[in-house]
Image (cartoon, rainbow, N blue to C red; front, side, top):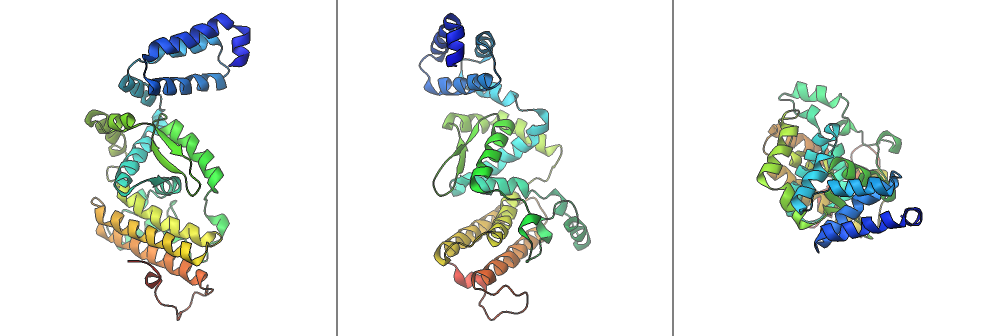
Length: 300
């Protein structure tokens, strides 16, 4: 921006004055518009192009949100709908951790909603392999990100898929996801906007269930713990307790998929937690163990 101001000082001043005039004292509007202008600067837009970009931005917040969402490419709108549904489903429980959102999107399982055991067996052999991960799986057989890489990956996905209406809050312990402002939540959850988002998934995956994705994310979360360096015993106990309690709440709220799938996911959680518990206690053999069940390790 400094370079542009030096090359075109009058136009740069006009751009600043136009932002101030259009803002009408609404700081959030300024913040969102600056984000759009910064995107233009990253594209090496000159001042005249930035002014045209500014002129296209609506002056009211809700119209601005409409404008932001309209820029989501058609190939991303289904994942945008899933992301907003998962976020809303989890919102009752507290802050949605970034890794949990990533897991829930990764773990969406349209192929495991078979009605029979035979269909389920076939589904487990399909492209989505989360249910068939062996207890002794190697780290290079499943993709997960270290915190900084996950932040970079998801920051791009949220901006691309959700029009910038969801953002990442950075914290020392774990990054979380939130709306950019409460007015953005009010806009997305407005009946007409929400109905449009639902249509995009309903036409492709009519039985998509965000709570099922969150339950599967819990299974994947436990498996990720098994692949990483284990934290100290107290922290591991707290983590596993939290994941299990959330898993039960997700399972309770699942309504649209076959109950047998829910049971399969709970059994898969049990297998993953058993593997993790054995590893934490120095017993990684696959045979019988004298250890108590992993649930005895938790707070209830």
